[in-house]
Image (cartoon, rainbow over all chains, first blue to last red; front, side, top):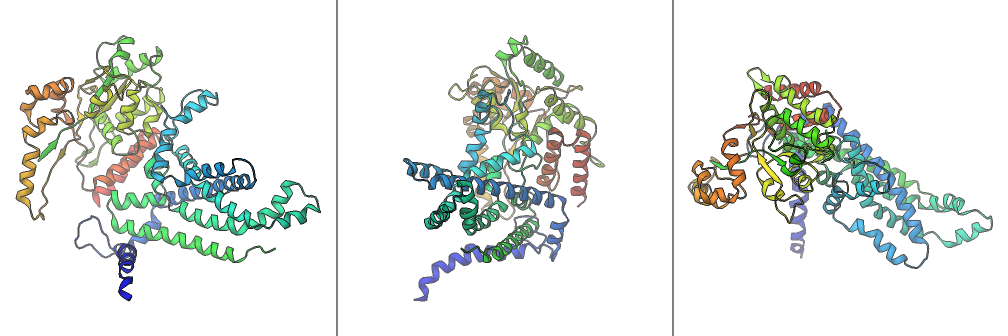
Length: 284
Length: 281
């Protein structure tokens, strides 16, 4: 009956193991074109080149900024949304379905949508802000490096906050009501009971969100590709985008392969840190 | 084998220009600034110029065209040369129009299609773009200024040079191909005058005699008239072995200058240093 496993084995080896191995192999050679041929073996040369490149560290700094800021906003907004969705009120089901919408959109659609919203000439953001008299003139949102990075973060936060919100909502529903009822004897206000009861019990959920989101954000590529292509002046060039440019535009496939493995290494480090943190959960 | 001929033409909104008192396209890049200042001061359009200066190949095309007009060179015998003379003047010109509020700040995030949209919305009066813009910007179903957008030879620099950036494409057969004869037959077919004349609306033919052929002339009479001179006056982007890498480095430094992170001189010097490394590698 083992032959029934064959299709899944082909899939696993064909589209996971083989490309991984092939990328690792390529990363030890100075491959400079997509054509088959004999390329010089450079050992760890591509890896040392990675750590010596100023563009690499600049991209890492941008990626860390993207990761920290986007994850932080997604978490805070996610908790607030989850608290709202947890209150029983008329129309809660409708609210929950609306909140999930951004998450359901494909990233490519989300990226295009925000590119249009941020468009300086016919975008909705400029129209809204000028009509509210927040800004006097139309502004270019993706035309300067640091502002563009923050606007891409805003688009990413809009898309991914629902994930955090629904994970927190699930976490909220596992908190026993008795805890709040018992606390009422001591008469805390809503804010006190949130910080003393709700938040500590949400720690495991929050950690899971942090794990998922930092790892995802660190690899961010598609939304950058759609919205800015790393520009202007490399302002939104994250590490994954840098690897893409090196491999597929400059055609340094060996160097690109090494970059891919370095990114994976960073993520493994994150995962190990989080794994340790998750072991020390709060128990009540 | 040449397949598609294209270059960047100068597009302008003739209604806007005539409101500002100009009856024809500006002949030089200095005239462009004069016209733009008039358009802005008379309140006809806030940002008269829009360009495709996003971090992409598009910015190199606009830069190449200005570099050619100002008499610059990408490379000379000793290596990169765009950081002196015309190459430097070109970037300083670009930055100056941004600083003076003549160029739309959105240029640093725009590609060629964005340029078409902004001109079509009536929010810019002048732009460089490929042939395809003429039909789109004058199509009433997509453009609010249909019928107002005219095409002209690209403006010239102080020496009178006015080359368009060469955006043509050619077809090749790889030496490893197992079907070289069939490939050649196909290439002969799609580059034949008969086939090319049929697609003139999207891409002008490679055959000189087509430009007097009524079938071609009548499809795009305005563009064909300009194309006759512009297509014989073009500038090539530099022919270097690792072109993508060189282009990426130059795009970055041009944007560094345009966004104010570096002076044009500093940015181009840094790009030249990067190119030196690529050329000697």
